[in-house]
Image (cartoon, rainbow, N blue to C red; front, top):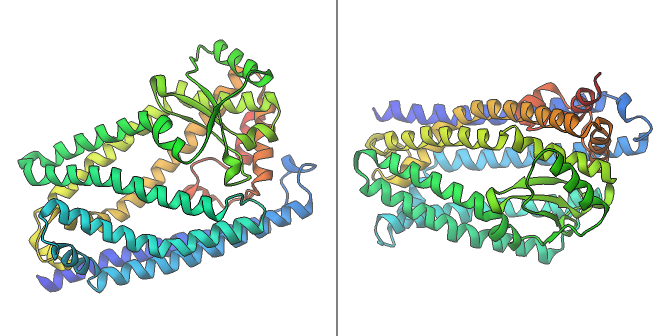
Length: 415
């Protein structure tokens, strides 16, 4: 039995490595595909050869950086699994003799610290070398470290509360513990969706109400024309960290917000900004957010049931290096066993997200009667962020939550 179970773990590790290799191969194919392509017709006159070459260089830097990070991360993860690292961390947590709930929290705290130690040099290099080299980084060392410390603090507080509750449910919830745990997790998730815009996000960025003027008037006029009640229009100091621009819709009910990066407001005309906002409203009107939440709940429902199955397996826990079955052992095993399935569900989720983006674009086109403005905004956003204008279809299928900008522009401007 031990030999069989060891073979099973080796098989899971092999699948993990194969998925990582597949992603690496697709990224290399994407780089070659982009380098072989020229400036698309829709961008001629807006992108010259020098700008296009800079975008290619940016993609190359990002690709090789990602490959190095993925390679080292895969080696570290698989080695940690096969050499009994999870069991060692579990024994370290057990050594504090603080009971099952605290032991589980210590276990995940130690793993999180290890992950942060490994990730920190990569995050630093990406921000202060790659993004700096191509003119995107606006983040100071103080801001970078402040964000990191705030993130750790929130992780400790929110992760600790959620983790303690979930462990308690699995220990005391009886036959349907996983169902109680899933219900609490769902409630916790939804609560954060309401509170994040007004409690958590302001810890990292400054949000100012959009001042009176031409832009606000145009936005309010559009919102009134589609019967969309605005709870708040805000600008965010995105330029504090990056010169890249964006906009997003967040929150529900009286916490609902439309947020425009200050860089977006500076770089685009009023009609373009109204078109971008119309796209975001389209996500709400087409119920994309609710659909994505529903899919997330179904996925987490299956995952929590899977936890409960693994929690009862003594042999599997020992094969992963744990002395005894535990909640932390079940969650660790679920990560590894569920990884191939999450890869597949990720493909489906990304495909659905791309479909939603087309639908939101169509909504903006129908309601503003100004498709050229949204197309112009998409072009400008792509050019300023040095986006890959010729992504490989496999890369799109694997990683893109938005359709390639060329496809979006052509759909918008189609007769």
